Length: 198
Image (cartoon, rainbow, N blue to C red):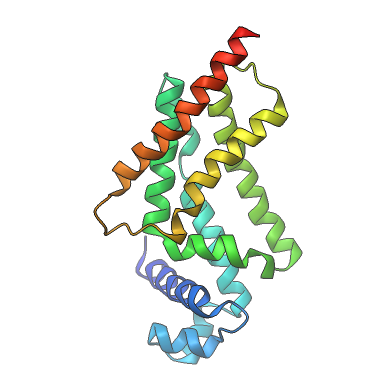
């Protein structure tokens, strides 16, 4: 990452923290510039508007989430280990970019429809990657509606850690990931047995 790219990400992360504390609507470009310790003119050198900042935050976060996800999964044969990997990736990404994650979950609706559509497309790609792994664990014998429910259950377990999880606390990302994996796959294993008995 170039020095300029790092600066842009720093400004975006600063803005995401403000959005988390004050809300997107209530945060001004002046607020972001002050918190980032740059001039208002300097802000406009990197971002033309507050909407551009939000779009960058959400797009960049989804790029972090999607980065090499298919390649990483393809290197693992065991479906259970694929689920474990995806959970660990997810928790690590959220832990490293917590404020960007919060912006995605709470402020995406503030984007214009054309920009929001692109973010939603990235989210759909990620959902599809997760659903494919869950489906492979179940032996591809689950109907689409149930697979959707199970995949959203997994996403819910991972996404909402932002509201309570402290990565600097006593439970690190790896341990938290294992706990989520154990909880999710325990119930998923029961569901798989029921499918096999049908």
